[in-house]
Image (cartoon, rainbow over all chains, first blue to last red; front, side, top):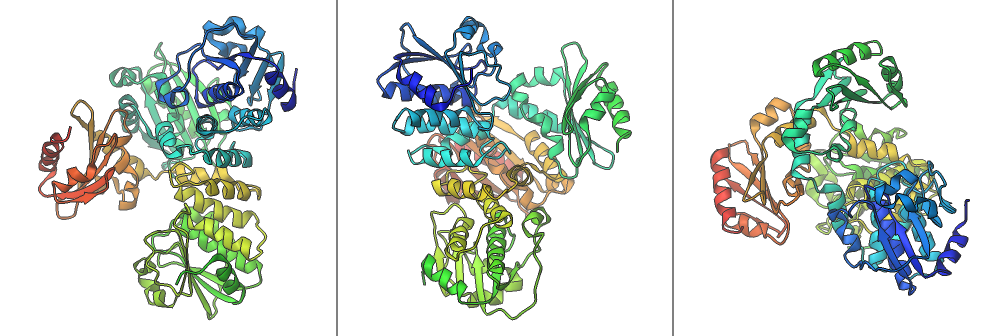
Length: 314
Length: 314
C-alpha cells in the first residue's frame, strides 16, 4: 500500500525499536539512507539497528564511524532504497515479508512492504529520508548531513547525471550548512581508484580499436585481463560507456569475455544510431542508446561479427 | 577600487553599449559569465558584444549559438573572470587599462580595473553574474540559466571540489527551473574526450610505476608521447592528480618533459606528506599537498633523483 510522508513520520514517531534494512551490495544511497535514518531516530531517543546482507564496505566508513550495533528485539522494520525482495540478500531474505515501511525511489519497486513511500522522481532515496527526518522534527547535524549528502552525490554522479533535480541541489545546499566535508567525501567517492582498476583501465585503453572513420570505437575485456590485473566485476563499472565518450564516436562497443569464452557485447550509441537494432540482429536487444547481446566464439570472431553487423548501419 | 553589487547594477543600467571581455584560453566560467551578462543586457534593450583574444572553443557552442556579433562603438567595458591584465591576450591587451568594471572571483585579482566587484569566496564568477542579473531585474530564462549553470559546474568539477558552496547549489537549483539541459551539458563538459586524450591517457597509464610498497606512484609524459599521440598541453589537464587517486598512494608524482629535455615534476600528496618539502630539496616549492620542481637530465635520471629524495621522507 502506498502511504504518504505524514503517515510515515507518524508511524516512526509511534514506535521505539527499529530494524533498518539496506540492500545487498550496498551503495552510498542505501547506506546514507539507513544511517541517516538511524542517527535521526537515535536523536529522538529511540533504539535502532542498521543491517545488510553484505558487510558494510570500508570506503563508506565515514558514514557509520559513530554507529554502535545494539542488540534488541525490533518492533518495526524499515527497508531503505530496497526495490525488490531479491535485494535483501540471503541473510535477511526471511524478513522481506515482514517489512512495515519501505522508503524508496526506484520506479521498479515491487511494493512488497506493508507501507511504501515511493518517490520515483527523487534522484536518491536520501532525498526522501531528508523529508522524513524533517517531518519528524529531527535537528540536522554533521553526521546526518554527511549521510544525506553522500546518498544524493553518489546516486547522481555528483550532480552530473540527468536524474539530478532542483531538489537534489536544494537538499545538498541545506546539508552543507552543517559542516559536511564535501571535498573529502567526493574525493573518496569519485576519485579514489584501486590499483587493479588502474591496471584494467590501462589494458582496456590498450585494447581500443577504431572503425568506420573513427565513428565506431571498440574495447575488450578478456578473462586473461581480469586475471592478470586482479580486477573484479565491479571494478569494470562505467567502462562500457568509455568508447562513446570519445569525440566523434557514434557507436561505442565493449566486448566482455564470459566464463565459457563467449563475449557479452554492450553497445552505447550517439546521434540517433539505434543500438537496439544492431544488437537485435545478433539476438539481443535493449534501448536506442544502450543495448546488448552475446556473440559466440573467440575475441577475433566476435569483433568480426560485430563489424559486419555495424557496417549495415553506418 | 572595490565596488559593491548595487553600484555595479546601477552603472550597467545607466549605460547602453557594452564590450564584455573574457579571458584568453577561455573556459566555461568566463564564457558563461560573458554570455550570461550579454543575454541579460540584451533583454534590457542594450547593445553588447562578447570578445576574447582566442577563438570561442567549439565545445562551448551551446552557450553562444544565439549570439549575434554586433559592430558599434562601446561606451562601457566589462571584464569577466579576468584576474590579471596578462590574461587579456594579445588582441585585447590594449584595453586592459580601460576596463570600467571587472567582475571576478579570483583572490589573486590585481585590481587593474576602475571598479572591481570581487567575491573570492564564490566558486565561480557566474555566481556573481547571477547576482548582478538579479540586481538589474533581468528575467531568467533557459539561455541565461544555461550560461550560469555551466560556469558553476565547470569551475567546481560539477559540484565535486571543495570550493563548492551552499550558494553554488542554490543558484544551480534556481537555474534548473528554466529547463537547463544539465545531463547534456555535463556529458559535454565532463565526459567527452578527444582521441588524442584517450591515447595520451593510455600511454600515461602504461608509464605508471610504484615505489615504497605502493605508497608512491609515478607517471611520466615525454615529448615523444605528446608527438605520437598528437595530444596538446591542455589535454594533459588533471593527469597530475592521477597517481594520488590510487588507493594507498601517499605521494603521487608526475614527470613531464620540457622542450630542453629537463623534467617538470608535480608532486601531489596525501596523509600529511609534505610535497613542498620534497620539492624544496630539489630547488622547487609549493604547498603541503601540491608542489613542483624541475629536475635536469633524462627521464631515468629524473626518476632516480626523485626516488632518492622521496626515500628521505617515507
